[in-house]
Length: 148
Image (tube, one colour):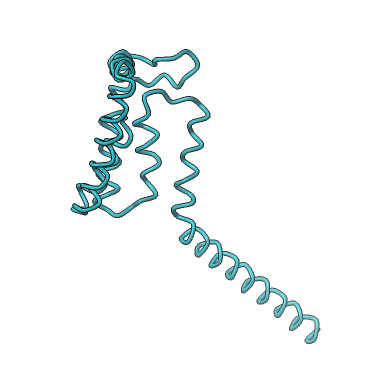
């Protein structure tokens, strides 16, 4: 499939060779096994991919051709790997899908999960700042009441 193939970029640009080889071996094993069990499906799959290069493959899907999305997906995944920004992987995976349905956008929720600690830390800092301001306001109000 396209998405796991591009996922190999993550390990390649990070020079994580053992993970790269393991992922590549798993991908090749799955391809080999399925080609033996159902050889015609791979021909159908490549026909779908080549047929979707110039337009959306299915009515009701997001009409951005695969030929446009695939290089962008590779760039996003390579950038994410180089920068160590795993939260960008869901965007690359979404772009690499042969057909993007509107419901496929839910994949982007994984980006939030991958940034959870950072988001929680920022939210905690925001709440602490709101609490500090509230306490200052209360203190100022009490001071005004006691001096008034």
